[in-house]
Image 1: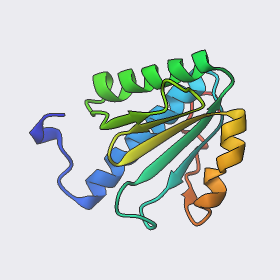
Image 2 (image 1 turned 90 degrees about the horizontal axis):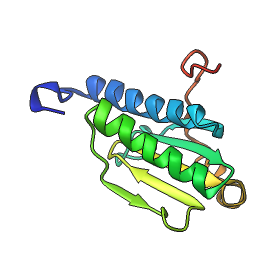
Image 3 (image 1 turned 60 degrees about the vertical axis):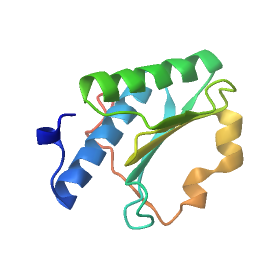
Image 4 (image 1 turned 120 degrees about the vertical axis):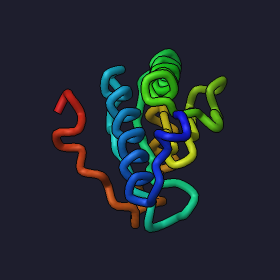
Length: 134
């Protein structure tokens, strides 16, 4: 993103963060990910705006989702990933885009950590009409 495209106020930043979060969720759906949700974290922490959570059935599927999210957010939307964890183990891949954090789990690990329950005070973003498959 070039400087002239950077959000210049809190509302623009929130819109941009939601755009990134929904783009990541769409990539997860496009790759047949399951149980996709976006948690609005803005009122719970100043560190990031949204969590995107999705489940994959295999290491290969989790890798594909991770790589395609990178392509979508970096190449198409001009953002930059700040960090990636868990890629080699492929049970929980975390992609940090600053205002958006994407969590890609295998089924067992997602059930064990239960991020939606841990962050139960976070509002779930209504994805009706957001994802193409819905």
